Length: 404
Image (tube, rainbow, N blue to C red):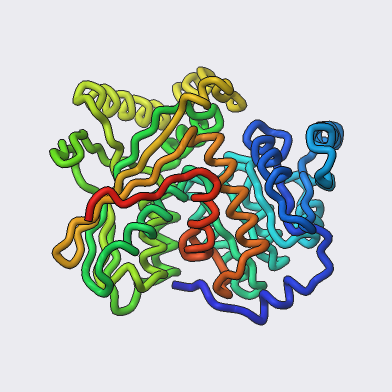
C-alpha cells in the first residue's frame, strides 16, 4: 500500500492559518442541504465551518435560513467556488482543514477539487460510488496527497461506510491471526436519487475505461506483502441460514472493503470478501437481473443511454414521507478459526438521511478526533476506524452481533 504516516507533512498543513475547520461544497443541492442541516446542529463549540458553491445568492439564502432556524448557533461562512475555476478551488482548499463535496457525478465534476486538496494538504471526503473516479484520483493525486499530508477519503456515504465499517466491526468479533472468509448481503427499502441513477448509467457506459484504469492502479499500487487479500465474486444462490436469495452486487463496496483489509493487519493473513444483494423472492431476483442486464446493454449505445437518462431527472429525490419509511440493513457472515459469526448494520433512509449523517460525521471525525497520522487515498475504516464507528453509531446506525 502507498499510504504513509507522514506526520511532518500533516503538522505543516494543520499549522497553516486556515479560518475554517470544514467547508461543505455543493451545499445548495438536495443532499448538500441535508449535510448542511446536520453540520449546523452538530458542529462542536468553537468549530468554524462554511458552505460553498457557485451561486452566491443561493448560498446566502441557505445561510440565512439556518440562522433563522437556529439563532443560538453561529451561522456558517459563505465561500464562492466553481469546479470550472481551479483558482477558486485552490483558495477554498487552502482556507479549511477538511472539505466535504456532494457535487457529482464525480467523474465529471470531482477531479479539480481532489487536486486542490491533495496539493494543499487538506483532508477531503465525498460520496463517490464510482470506481473509475476513485482509481483515477489514486493514479493522478496519490503522490501529492502523501507529500502534503492530505487524507483523501472517498465513498463516505451509503457507498461505502455501512459495508466498510460493517466488516471492520465484524473482524473485531472473530479470532485474530487466522484466515477469514466474509460475505455481506445488503437489503434496502428505499428510493434512490436521480443523481445516483445517472451516475450508475454513466458507469455502465464506461466499463472498458474503468477496467483499464483499475489495471493501471493495480500496477502502481502493487500487492500486499506476506498476506493474501482477495475478492470472491460468488454466484446467485439461496442462503438457507439467512432465508434469502443472494445475488452478486457489482458496486464499489467490495473494493473499499478489500482496500481496508489490505491496509489493516487485523483482517488476518488470508482474507476474502463477497458482496451480495439480499432479496426475498426468486421472481424479484429474475426480474432484477434481467432489468439490470437490459440497462447495462442499453447504456453502451449513445442514443439509448440518452433516452434512459431522460426518464429520471438528475436532481430528483424522494419525499420526506418516503424517506421516513425507508430503511436498510447489511448482514455479514464471517467464517474464521472454526467459528461462524453473523453481524448486522442497519439504519434508516440510506440514500439521504443516513448518507448525510455519515459524510458529515466523517468530516467531523477528520477535523476533530485523534486519528492515526496517515496520508494519501484512504478508506473510511483505515483512516478513521473506531472513532468513525463510534460517531456513526451515535448518529443512528446500529451495529450488532446476531450470532457467534
